Length: 169
Ligand code: FES
Ligand code: FES
Image 1 (cartoon, rainbow, N blue to C red):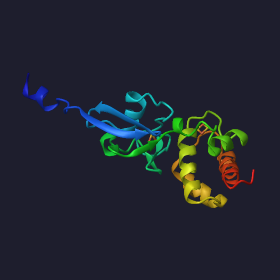
Image 2 (cartoon, rainbow, N blue to C red):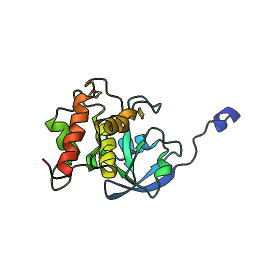
Image 3 (cartoon, protein in one colour):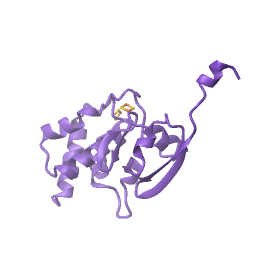
């Protein structure tokens, strides 16, 4: 092996243990692995999308201990011991999450590429603020880009979910 080959040798794999959608999960990862790649490739949770890889679009948004993060900007190892929620974790035995129902009822998507990230960001907003104004919804979603909808129905979807969570629907 030449000196050059030695210099680019991959670092040793490490094991990351975390909770994903309520289940304990673990995987062996290259320390350089991004969280989004752990979720999609190692754990098979392909509902988390990759739109840009530069922290611009929000398609990769997941909840980290309930807080929205762009999983293309985090190393998988940084999620050690933390709880991750992906779009696959929104539906429960009781049915769709109100935010999923809101997107369905208000036609809050077209191609759907941005939708998982939008829904997780919105879910976190409603946990913190059960009755957000339109401006607060738009501000909360400002890190999530949609190329299709013009955002109006996304805002309506979040308002629908907020009302349902308050028992008004
Ligand atoms: Fe992460 Fe676009 S893929 S912000
Ligand atoms: Fe297509 Fe948002 S529905 S990017």
